[in-house]
Image (cartoon, rainbow, N blue to C red):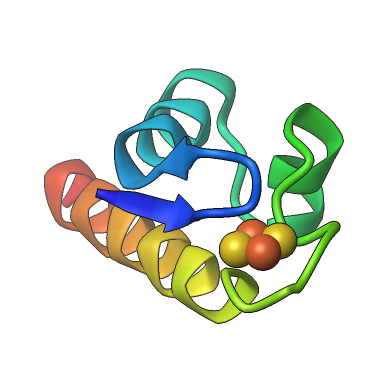
Length: 62
Ligand code: FES
C-alpha cells in the first residue's frame, strides 16, 4: 500500500528502512526518502507505521 502518493513510497519501504537501518523516527525516514516533502499528508501514517514496527520489535526482544 502506498503511504506517500506524491513520491510513491509504500508501507513496505518504510518498514524495511525501519528494520534494516534501525530508523525509529520520521526524521530518519526523511533523510532516506522524500516522504512528506510535497503535501505532507503521509507523515501521520508513516509515524503510525514506525510505531507499529517498534512495538513488534519490542515484543520480539522480550
Ligand atoms: S503524500 Fe507524501 S508528500 Fe504528499
